[in-house]
Image (cartoon, rainbow, N blue to C red; front, side, top):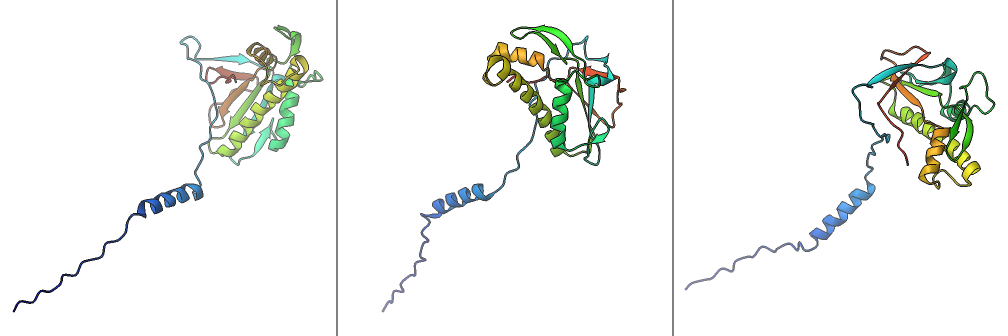
Length: 211
């Protein structure tokens, strides 16, 4: 007599919800994970010409403000230690020279479209010197303060002349404001060959981005 043995079947796992669980875990991972954000400075590089790769111009000492970030991450302005908060006020006074001081950039009389005859400090130079091993955080902070200072001065002038902010001005008005307060920044590294205090190297390495 034959006997039949019943085969045991292996129970199958219900995987219908695995995809949903994986999707939820992916969302949780994206929410709780901190992503590193790259920092950078927006600059528009002009084309390099063969005749004008680099040229040196003699600049009066009163027209130059030396902003230095040394290897110890210390901020110096004309050799004096200064905080980033103090730097903004120092830049405002240097660029504008409201009292026409003999120790600040000299003023020249120029005709500017839409603004008329103006006395401006269009020959000032902010010389930014940074050690190669200084931190990027302080370097970017100083750069942002410089840009914010120019924007603050242009905003103030826009309110006085055009009764609106710099951002609300049209292209012609913005051009006039930039001509009144031109952004003049020279950057060098401390371990490079440094120009003398009365000489500023002007090269086609960067250009202010027009908003």
